[in-house]
Image 1 (tube, rainbow, N blue to C red):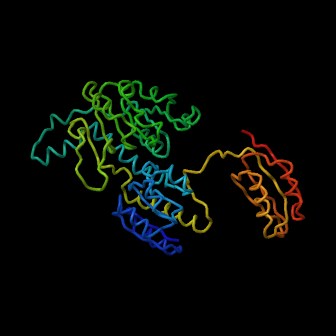
Image 2: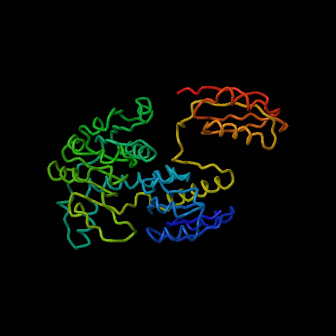
Image 3: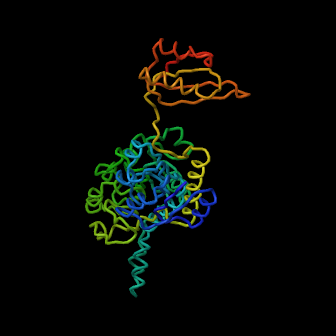
Length: 402
């Protein structure tokens, strides 16, 4: 199986994949037209990327492509809709960089409170400003609003407790019971979490529903002078609203992500927000530790190896959670060549579309049971035709609960 790795991963990933039987091509500098050309030339079954964007035209350029692995959390850099339309699996490595991002989150938090970056810069310029930099609020006893309680959010909660910070959390999946287990105050909405909080930390995946989710109203609900940290995706936070809140309400921000970021590892960063002294930025490095890289590499190898050995894809994000099937056709039959093909041919002639199916073999491999999910119940005459074969023992149709 041919694998194209189009981003920088731990060097041992290639060795492990080759040992598993893959033919691996590595070019961490591929993007844009160069990636499209490589997909045509290499024609891989599997494409592995980290931050590199994969568009619909590139997916179509690789005839054999059947799996795209994002070696990281989220899949917002991949055209998932086109991949789904072409039957290409999309998978990722959720949670493997959670600790790294949580650590950077607290690096930003401590820096915002103690202005460590400004301290360092002053000393490097030969200036001693103890009087100015001795002023800090402190973090213990403050209230932190956490938006998003996935793997990263939970790691942040653990660290917040260690600092004596009170946590109020909101996530679409969070329940009062789970909040209690995590030792945090439950917020029914993102606005409820923000109201009066001294710290806001954002850990939401980028989806159509979260784009610009944190806007002017949320920022105005925070305590005056609050600290805002975003290590998720730049587009989740309304950056224009943040700039306004910095100017009018004294907010300060630690940002690892931005609304407009350079495409590659190097380039000019011209975003206006960089000029604000109340903003401390890092270069989208939240997941960039050796520990996180190794964890992501292990999961990438696991995904591809499992796909190679079993044909299944761990962490797949683009399978239909609820198929259009309305009924299950259950057929007990002889385990012989051509039996299933005959059943499917009868369904084809009746214009009944198969959505999903499984075939379970009984001991001795003499008989099997096929469970075929279909988009409508076959007519009685179709079932009768299927049952005419001596290899069919019994048929039944079951309506699926909707």
